Image 1 (cartoon, rainbow, N blue to C red):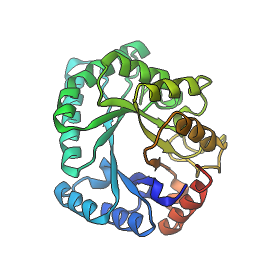
Image 2: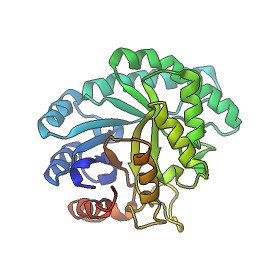
Image 3: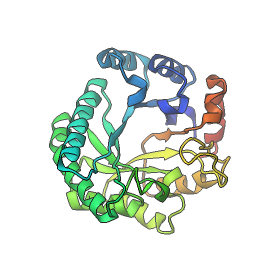
Image 4: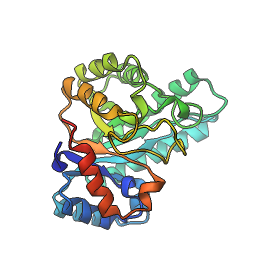
Length: 271
């Protein structure tokens, strides 16, 4: 896979500002960018949008919305309001898709969390439709199911999409979170057949994680899951940009230009 087929998530190069990300991703020959909200916090979003348009990078997604669950109606209403703001910000930035990490509240059952997630997505879909922005539900690894995301499998995400049945609602498949699923091929095929496979994220999973969130690895440097999942996604018909999303305290201490070159080399064997 060539670098112009890759989009880099700005959290991958966390030490850089949004301007450094835009300038250097383009300089290194990457094709696109997915912008994390943390990277543009406090920035003039219209200015960032202009800078992005001038860069030649393809705008892929805004990360992240969601976190819909809560024990009170007021908490859930505030989450909906926050996501409506995220939709407006995504529109200002010119980013056509928002990745949803849907949330989970400790003490609630998975079914309660999933029900609240479904209701909340339904509440924000009209605003997404008005803005022409797609919403991509990202299933997270089950280790996050208690307090971060009750959507733990591709099947969970597919079920939510089927229940809401909206053309702007789909799934973001992230290797780190879904590689372990014995029904993965079936659910990727199901998702793609319904035209709901909106995004594909790569990094590798390590067996000896030092941190459950911030110790991800380059493709091919962990359990070797990327190539297999990449082949499943491509065989299902996914033709969008492959997004690189690596959270690593170790790589963040390195020279970020060298890190980007490592990403190119690691992703090159992917088809």
